[in-house]
Length: 511
Image (cartoon, rainbow, N blue to C red; front, side):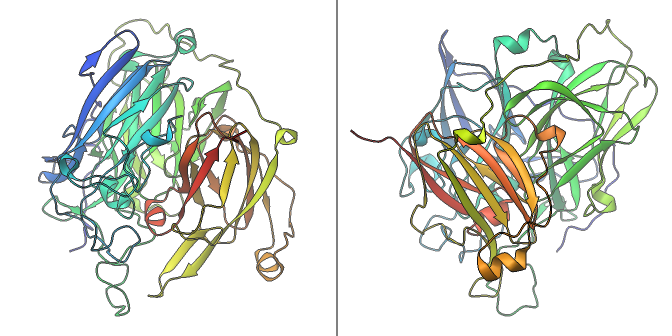
């Protein structure tokens, strides 16, 4: 039964995600044990408890809050059932009947991580590590935290069922701090709040609804069949449907993540007031950007300050104004500026934030043209591919350690794909429209307009990039500092599971 039920908005308070404490800690490293469990949790006042999977039995998972250069070791423990409660399509590569139905592996999204701790999709394991995937390497992951201060997130990455495992609840924040951040006098403590945004559909009994097939009348399709893409019926923030947050008339810092399966978000405040953006996926911008709205595709993050000081007594709604939004998914959450000011707000909105090393096109050793295409599979389902290749095809993206490359992502499909590269942060150089039909016939790019720079809110370091259809999106990255096998993929989870993911390799030349 489809979950198209109406739910009253702004009746539940926003949950503040708990921070995770280490099992053991020294001055230089911390050790965590994090268990994936099945449990039930109320996601709306008028719903019954919802069956979920979560890290440490919570949804979203608890937040890691760590210092730069402080090494973190994590033993990710799978204590989930052996049967999935969401529909598994066994025709999807990696999810066939010969592998266990429930498998997990954790990826620290945005982290500069050694290959054997990156959460390679085929490094999966079952409950208590009883069965492991073909590339399984270790039970305890190492995170060196050599990145700048930034908001990362951790989530499941098992080949063929990532969309189901994350939809079930396997996602959480991972914050890295550094000493520079502490000098900026930003809103902190209870005035810094991570917001993990996802969309979900429900059955009347409160259970999660996920469609078993895109079209039940199509007899060609297997059952269950992957749905690409999937936008659900309700917006959740930190595990509650369209919650409210009571705030003081002062500045707050919000770390916002689009952790949906496929849904694009265009966010703005209905009060008309601006956001003061201070960071992107990869940490601080060089200077604060004053913006009225911004687009977040799946997996993108933004770091913003909202100043409520002039709005005491008012109610403000964070709106999703994307054209594809339904009436149910336009209201993300509500801010009630009704809490009395408990102390003077001495925090700042800095003008300048932090310089970072910019890469220039002349530094690139190679320019790669990589097509985004759409084909049909044996059942007639639309299958998006990266450079026309399947997951099992030979690795074609091999980069020598330390080299700089420009990737030109040539999107001939109809979707704006969020393309994520593991291991590296990159900069967006430009987007330029081109004649898709001419390219498909000749293989040559015929541009139909000038290149445009990234949007103001994209000018920092990124690990996920929006690639609009009929555009060439150019990014530049330095590949390293680790070697090994990683992946790059579309982060619309239904696309990622359905072949829109490719291995890549960073290698060191042997002399």
